[in-house]
Image (cartoon, rainbow, N blue to C red; front, side):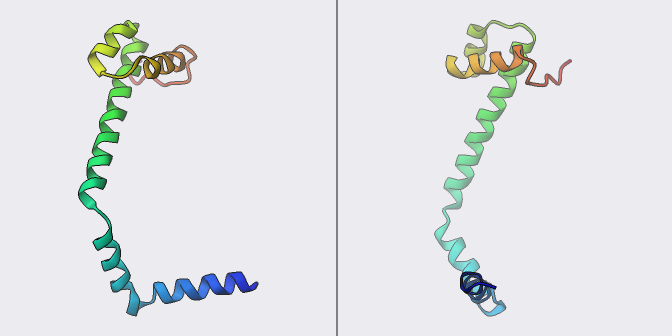
Length: 95
C-alpha cells in the first residue's frame, strides 16, 4: 500500500469515525443551503418536463413554432430535440 493510499485511509477514518460523524454531518447541514438546492432541482425538473413535452409533440408532428409557444423552450433546444426525434434516438412513449 502506498503512502498516498495510507494517508487517504487515515483521513477518511478520522473524518468518518463515530466520534466525528455527528460533527461532520452537522457542519454539512449548516453549510449547505437547502432552500437554494431544492429550488435549483425544482427548476431542473421543470426544464426536464418541458423537454419531454417538446419531444412528444415533435414526435407527433407538431410544428417547432407551436412547441416553442407551449413549452417556452428556445429554438436551439427544440431543433436539437427535433433532430433526435427525427433520427429515432429518442423514444416516444406515446407510440
